[in-house]
Image (cartoon, rainbow, N blue to C red; front, side, top):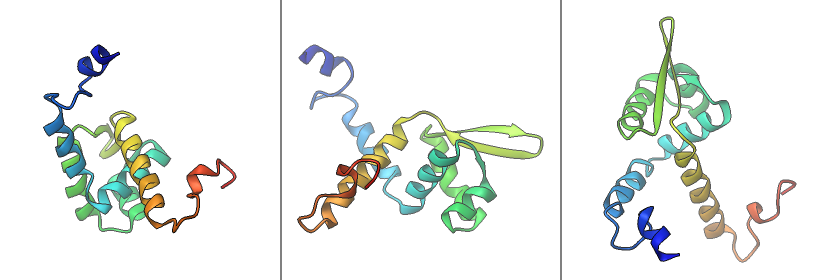
Length: 121
């Protein structure tokens, strides 16, 4: 069982620990978290559609998308003159989901957070 953890980088001495910290750093911005959530909900969006979804200017969203793209969290596809963005894989979405759940615990005030109540909430 420990061999599995070492192979996939889950050992505390893993070479991936520093890279994982960089991933958290990239996702430490609220606008980037909103972008991930918007792309999770819609699969593929233009910069303008993302800007509308997150309530920010298209130029600001473009800068955030550039960081997410450099980190290989989002990819693009050209459709005519439009560039469409999508999540590169499910991992950024999963990290954001877990962070949101942890945030719910921090404000639950002794109550059971909503995510523990199932789909009906």
